[in-house]
Length: 272
Length: 325
Image 1 (tube, each protein chain N blue to C red):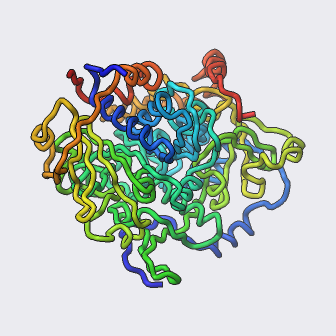
Image 2 (image 1 turned 135 degrees about the horizontal axis):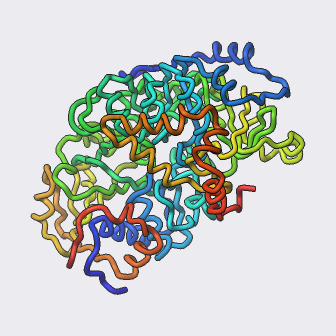
Image 3 (image 1 turned 90 degrees about the vertical axis):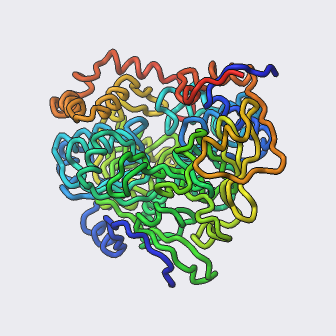
């Protein structure tokens, strides 16, 4: 494995996530939408875990998608559904999640707060008069509610890591209080597990459920990351360093997984 | 049952299982009789102004695109929409002035919708599966269903869901009301004249949606003989007495894909997305004029606005057949 020297922010996020999937290769992954979450799963499948248990929101169970997927076409289409173990529907996989069969959810977040709550509804204004309206929960609410552990993707930007998000579309630890999730009717012992940005990986404190910096990319220091957050996270006593993307990962990602650059083109270029 | 919290979102379609049973008894044919009709007849007869509308899938994938174009052509008004997993259809319907209320699961937000928000279109917030679970309850003939998600969020607070104490375990549980749409649209691979429909591949919630709806219009790539249905009954996705109208619509999902049959027409999909991005709304009006109003029906659309060469290319581009035949 050759360490890569130039890649995009999205590629950094995707490669860190794919390596996490490699380490937990016998778990199930319910992936929301397309973008970096799906690209991470497809990269992991192509490079590390050919038998990956990948679940798509439209009820596709453990496919081996015919990549590259066409632009737009991540659901109910022949290529993403290819060579699945079962074709079901949205309610079926939703009920499988309710049964506790899905270990990890992977989601993209528009905006998040110290407790890992997710906004994908609107920015600015209020509910009836949003300045910028977005699509809504989609399948993210059910993924964030019912998978045992949720992994969030979020760009490392001050406006993305805010003290209070404009709208809680999908649940993190809500107000962080003990048992807040189960008091709201959500399954117990679930919640956000990691937040992955191009520059860092965060977890959550076991007692307070407050976001905690766990690891840094090799090209940044703690302050570089804190400057790009509106709130100050807790910081682990011993910070890990994240592995850089490898040339092998990038080649598969750029040639096979996402040649149109719909997911990997996001964010700035990084040279190390 | 103790209610701990209630969402403040408007409930656009109040569940009433007995009224629904009575409606189906009076209006739905339970017999094996032909329901084949043109899209003009089906939409004219079964989509009324003010109806609450649901559709399976999207204009990208096995969506009922030809029926949606006919609804726009007939200038239906004040429709409610169960907007889960929808990108372009919701924008076209809103741009054409057909919609006055939306339950949001996921909507692709274009400028038509943005203007609709500015003008105060009524919305309630849910999630994709919250809406499909509501349809499941509707399909079971029950008034509500408990779910293990949605709780604790602002989406809950802007929905019409409730948080209750489970009467047996005394634990908190979210309840969502059943959804029984007035009318549902489903595009399928194959269907016979009675409405026995076959869908190949995964889907959003067509079976629950058909069973929960007062009126169901099926459009189908091809009409097959009932003999084929009877020879392989396990293949029937939706049985006939859940269906009111069967419309033959080859390439009916265009510009979307029908898995196993033809690829999506990405250029034409980008044309909708591009039109939706024009803040003045002119490009979207031009789109509707060119592809909807200026043709009389789906056959004219595929003949004059798509053309044989393009259709054949989309057909040839679909290389994956396994599982779809």
